[in-house]
Image 1 (cartoon, helix red, strand yellow):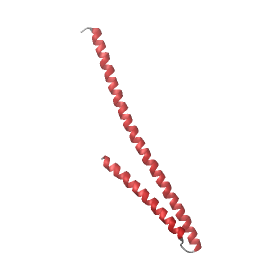
Image 2 (cartoon, one colour):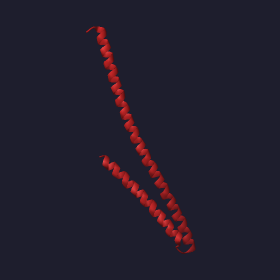
Image 3 (tube, helix red, strand yellow):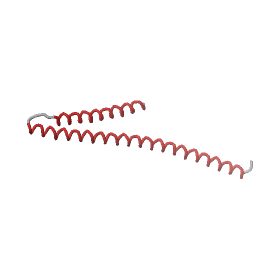
Image 4 (cartoon, rainbow, N blue to C red):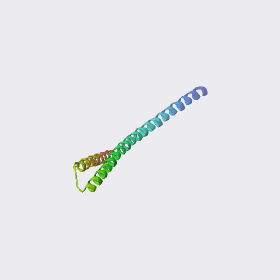
Length: 106
C-alpha cells in the first residue's frame, strides 16, 4: 500500500470512530432527557395533588371555624372532611406509586 492510501484509510477510520462516539453521546443524552422529563412529570403531579390537599385543608379549616362559631357541626363539615380525606388518599396513592416505581428500577 502506498502512503496516500494509508492516509485515506486512516482518515476513514478516524471519521468512523468519530461518528460512533457522537452517536453514543447522543444516545446517552436522549436517555438523560427522558429521565428528566419523567421526573418533571412526577413533580408536576405531586404539585397538583399538594395543591388539592392544601385547598381541602383550607376549606376544612374554614368550615370548622364556622361550625365552632355556631356551636354545632353541620353538613358543611362532613363535606369538607370528605374532600380532605379524598385529597389525602390521592396524595398517599401517588407517593406509594412513585415509591414502587423507584423500587422496581433497582
